[in-house]
Length: 446
Image (cartoon, rainbow, N blue to C red):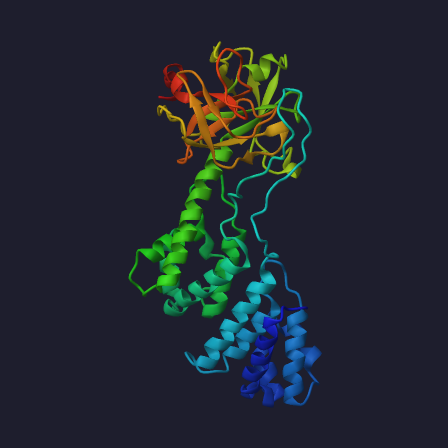
């Protein structure tokens, strides 16, 4: 397996460490110690006749570095190095350096290819028939990305290794993780593992964790870092404390954005054909624009929740709307329609705040029927009692989408191109402030 140039030094260090281990002077002792581990036992015959010790060291490094394990298991090279580390006395520099080396290599081997920027969804669009200009739609940020790239994963690994060295008793680790709210993850961890491997496993679990709609305000990384900040078990270095604070801040933003995105639906007619966007404001009730149904002249329509990836279509909560009997159908182009069923998703939070020009907003929408897009932050350019104009990109399919403020509360409903009769700033589209709907909506959301 090819490693970056900086790992050549690590491999040289590995040879140096292993040459100091008495295990390599007797193959029988080596076999009895290293291959007693169940995961390594099937491979002992491959190395049975390798001599002298320096050749055995080189062969072990080459063999285990290139041997691939299951996706959810630590690399074999780490299992091998962990066993070798046991030949050094506890709390010695050699033992800890070897485990740190194993952690560094694990981070490289187990991490996705780092990228300069978060992943974005990007799809070319054409000139729309409703007058919007040609534009590409992409997410401003990925709310599922709690650790951004190799550099952050490595930094977290080093910080958590210090935590794992301090809390090295399995029972203490168990109690701390439970106190931090990681009860469900505890069963997936080897609490007896060495500090480097324990930290590596934690980082791997955090990187692959998917936020559940059942607990939309929970991510184990955020919970653990919050807890570590508030205890006096050990002194967190200033650099790590600042790093934790950045990860917590991003994590909280991501959780709020995910909860907001979960409440947004793609409106379809017929099924699998997007015609607009809506938002869940009360269990069983979707708020959107009236013209989404009237202009398309559909007699039936459906709402699809959590349509966030192109290939996920068909697996999301999906319900037929009762558009023939709306709860509200206003001449101001908004409607509240019902559906039967429980998507097990929390409604969006509405705000009747009186807005002003310059207010920061984001749009979560399905432009041209695409998977949900979280826009970049835009501004309210103009505001009236019953309208607002904003500078965010939109297209057919965006109508009825919620406008969120910086606290991820819905403050407006996107409509589209402003009508005639008032001055409009070029490059803006229009919407309705939630404050203009509040009197009628409050009867349903109280």
